[in-house]
Length: 67
Image (cartoon, rainbow, N blue to C red; front, side, top):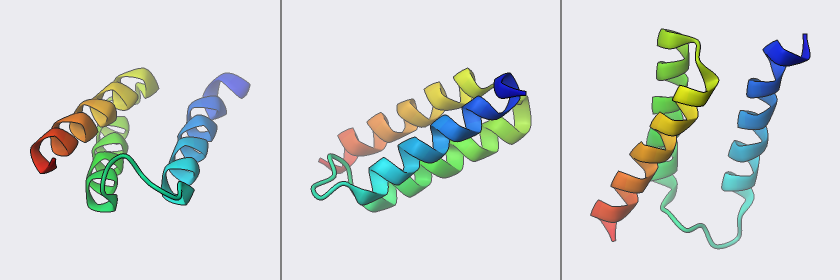
């Protein structure tokens, strides 16, 4: 049971920390797009590790293009 719910718990903690940070390293819009990419990739492939890698890659690319 823990194996099934752990990825969701980790993602909730990361999203909560990201949204509550006083000075985010990346804009809120980029974080929301990356979160959407994580959700869509998880719904498609059901692989938490792959979804987190996709989300980090999208966030890194958007942050690089914005700054």
